[in-house]
Image (cartoon, rainbow, N blue to C red; front, side, top):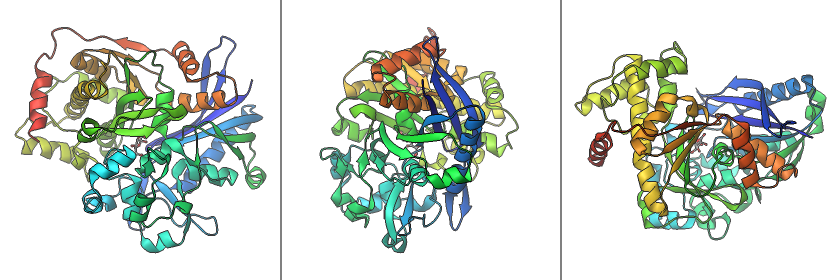
Length: 484
Ligand code: LFR
């Protein structure tokens, strides 16, 4: 049996998780290292401290060695859309800019002035979000782009630093909004529009392919196990969907973390008029699948409230306080751009309620209740749309990721949407990362078997709709949202 290590880095934290299939034929996880992540303002932009993240990976791998791991496969996943510009000397030009940086404000309107949105959507099937790589590159410093030998997405860059080998892994590359669905390649027209040459991106690689061994120079510098890096589904959401224990064809997923990604796994992309109108995306998944989903603001709102209160309460305490408040006291369109990176999330929520003539939440419990109730309403509304677009009723919603621990939110979602919610695993992203490595190494046969293994290995909690509760709330919410 081999050891497998998932390096999973999200916008607010990162971790290294050791995975094994134990004697009871269950997948077993052991967290070996955890660290915080976040962007900071430097050199005029909100940037990620990428060197520090790589240092943390080495610290984690050294810890693995101390735990007795001699030889391991390693997979790396992170958030999507952000990239590193690498110069002719193989070094990064600058620290990468975060997708929440304000530089792409209004970039969609600017870029789609002469290339229509319909045209871009037909080509790519990707939702229009200002954070997409396409708009970031559009706003990129032109001199820096000229000096760029390689544009590498964050996990591809980390893989490149570790092994010396560079690829553009497909699940993440698709989030650039620059892959052509039909051709299966970067789209030349879109690249030209943002002054990028096709040669500046490395070759596309499928999830599950081998990237290479960790470079000798790192092994001299750190006390590491003998590691081979596997290019997993490097977009964290792609790994989370792989790690979702869905069965059959009537389930949807909700990957709940800093973002809430709500959608359905498809075998054929859905880029028709309805999907375009509702701004659903077709991100490429592992094993030829598509993640048909929508980005929803997610726990970012609660994380931001917590940060502004100097982390006074834990997430569990905040959820308990929210649960004690009368629910649905105000309607908020939580996907409004204004909540993407406000100076103060608390002020932003309060002014929204003031401007719309609603009760202004004051206490932590009231603020968090406003966030959770409106997340649940958003989910329920979207699930209905999703079922209509894919022409299939959705009977089960699998909630995975850190947010799947919030029982209050799971129950609200089940009741409002009128469907069964299955919650867990909370480490679905690391799990998805690990099982792709195991499939690649021949220890698991395929994705269906991997999901069976996941269902057997973790405690999945089921929530059923409560009857006669919140009967008219969803309709009132829909009417409110329509006007905005
Ligand atoms: C989630 C995620 C989303 C992506 C957003 C920005 O962590 O990867 O899927 O849209 O972050 O990269």
